[in-house]
Amino acid sequence: MNNHQSALVLIDLQKESNFGLLNMEDVMKNAGQLIDACRQFDIPIIYTRQINRKDQAGLSKNEPLKADGTPYYYASHTENVEIFDEIKPRDEDIVIDKYRWSAFYETSLDLMLKSLGVNNLIIGGVVTDGCLMTSVFEAYFRDYHIHLIKDICSSSNEGSHMASLLIMANWVYNLEVYETPEFIKRLKDQPFQHWTCERPDSLPFTPETMRESYQHLQPRKEV
Picture 1: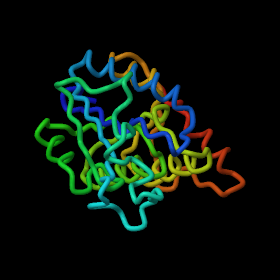
Picture 2: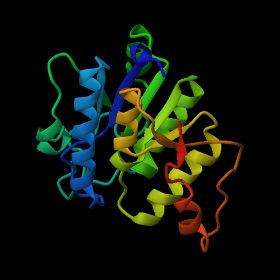
Picture 3: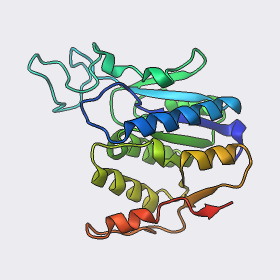
Picture 4: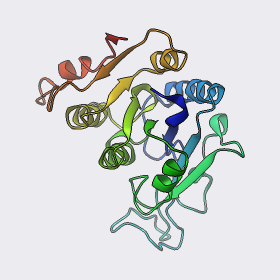
């Protein structure tokens, strides 16, 4: 992987808490370590923020609303739209505001990546089964090589989290999956372990076998 053709994209690591996302303490710790490592190698950091305008302009159809008519999630007039203080952007970082789940839908993300000469997209964030997964698929459609950091991803329930990661693993053919320490080893040109997609539907699952299939997604292939 050419570090000079890479960028880290962090999906919606915002203060919004109404989802009840799982394991966010670990997500934030791992994200902080990954950000620090990418800065050491001059890899650009790009943050996305989901924004739902207070006046409902541009709001998705049937977006949940509070009794006063303002958005329940990611309301523009609240602190919930801000990036967590522990990993807040620096002046040189790029922040992409979006109004739909995918970070690519009618935003400047693709333009920014192309202007930076990015081929390798290092990605993680929330929500695994919503904004993250749709962004990964759209990145794949745009021919980016996708490096998914699974321990900086989270959803509101374990089942949807596992299912979403398995779906991406089965159908994003150039996907590589890492835990944060293993990806940092790769940045440092040290031996590392990761998971790669070997064939379509390589991790099939049923409701009864999903957890077993998910265990095969653990990074095991040493390079």
